[in-house]
Figure (spheres, rainbow over the protein chains, first blue to last red):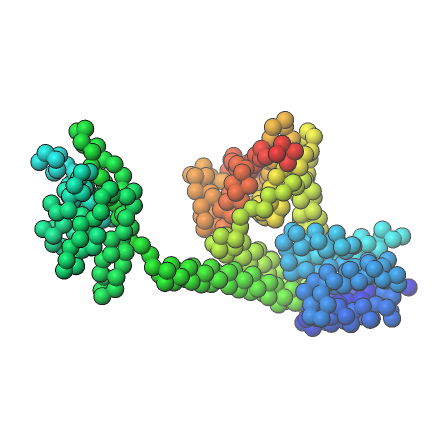
Length: 124
Length: 358
């Protein structure tokens, strides 16, 4: 069965291309455009993995990580952060809050895919 | 004062930009005054100042002699463009050939309003500077959003063409060129952002205990893995690792820059980073086997916007190493370089401040 990935990203220019790329690589993809919508979708869908932006309206990526970690239903779902912030401390904060991985923007899909594959392989 | 002494003293006074008076210690007679004192106190009329007793105010109709003894500091009012300003004189004893005089040097007392205004100006300047940094930080962040969308759309284009069996080597080459330019633009944004912070004096290091090998490990994972040319960064640690006192963010920028350079200016072998923990210092070497740096370029290497004479066709802003040097030194480290053309380059950093020693 295909792995389901929930993509939480507020810029349609990026989320549409990413959705197509993930689908081309045989993933089932759902898209949410902010953190709050992302959490609602995650609860309903229980995806195998979440890819989330850090800077988003309504609920940002770091707060989203907190919600995931403290939610009995969501806390085992790995979350990969996409971040335009390359400051070392921001990345470290995301990892401390329990992110399963991170990719800094801009990125090559190949790199994001390697992170995703790494996480799924670890679960086997 | 003997005439020749008086001349010597006058010469000395002329060089001082604040008003200066030399006053006799017994009768408080103004024996000498420099041009600035004459201009401010008596409107340029030396005859109203020199040779006369010191007064509590000048320009009054009824001059009043200054009470004795002379205090260590006194103020004289002067009129300036219709306003009254105060000159604050500080008095110190002066001995010339065994005889004692008073030397009084004046400073204009800043009115509270003037001080307020200056404070306001400074605050305005500061907030303007902060706005600039914020603006740069925001723009460089916002620029990354379209860059990411472009690079993802290109990835998608490439994947689609490949799936449809239409991806030629021509397509591949052009797509790779575009991707390289996007990442070049991205690293320029990083450098401009760092520079604007430095210009805003916003880069005082926040030194805390850090483990450099962990930073390099994280950078290797983040930026220097999954490379198109299949090369990777070799990392080795010798000695007993101990945390050093440094700004984590600045160290990460230093390491990122030196590692990217090692990849950028070499094509064949893997670049390597070696951390050597000695008893009193940590020596970190970044080594590549690339084009090297001509000897004539070495003295200018850390100057902003300077680029080596053999970097034709390799992108860069010439800002990286100048940022590197600033950050290494602000974290109390040193940086040196040795290089041979077409043999490769080695940068050596030395840090001596270990967290446990403080």
